[in-house]
Length: 398
Image 1 (tube, rainbow, N blue to C red):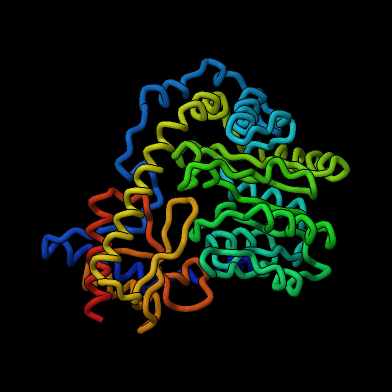
Image 2: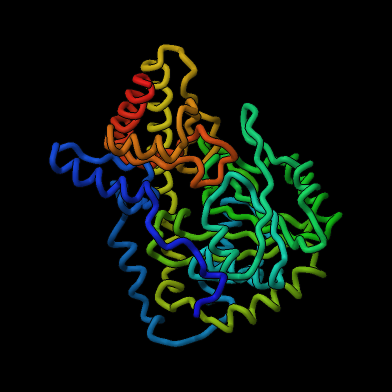
């Protein structure tokens, strides 16, 4: 009765079952479960300017229905201003933007634009697990290429060359990557442009965490890339820490011979769905204008938690290298490399059962081997530090 593309495993995984058990046990022993996987900034104890946010949704223009496939010009101009201000892309053209309700929808549009059923896209490994579901729904095959860790993360270009076939349509980069927190360097960008030019491929760049560099030094967006056809995805879910306000976009750049037909086709795709609603589009300029205070809170939280993690690693392990925090440049996550005495999933379940701490096992993000935990750096500071203490207690016992 159902399509093969939705033939997912629908039963709950072992970690979910363990979390439910841990919650029940925590009530019995009066010990809270500490969530070090938190990704929802609205539940992270941050201060939002609620009056301004709510007032932005009350525009009288929202009573008028003005369907624009690319999105209302006022909203697209606000996004263009964001790139002009944060990226110094002075000639950014709002006509090169397609507004979507989410980056997931943006991926869907671009996948449909580039790929016939069975065509391939090269995607980084490790990376965010959502890609697999999006590809299944669009009948696209994902071919992984590894990110290699050696005092930082790098793209493996020899593997890219081996992975490309006549069915490959593009390369996905996550800039910075989730969860590794690694940017695509300038040298890697140059190599990637050359690779895509040789094989006539597009670049799809996910930049939702672009603004969250730990050193506060701006990194160049792929939205400025003119070498090859490039689709840059982002949105206010992370830029403004407002995942409930569904505003995202696809910015198209590259040679005009490729950009113009791509935009024409994307506009028809967007016109077919007309998914963006008027109130949130009219609110977009005000929401983007409020991004800096909330971003600063998140950056402060990430830096504090990261420093606390490093401090506890030094103190509790007394110089032993049984656990190591991998280098991170940006984003909201840290990767902890741990001894391989069991599977990462088994370790995560033990943490729940014995220490009441929820952490993501590395295989959730398609790490190539066991020995990794992924931790959220936006968790409230007291919970994060207590959670790290409990994790390291278990590591010391082992």
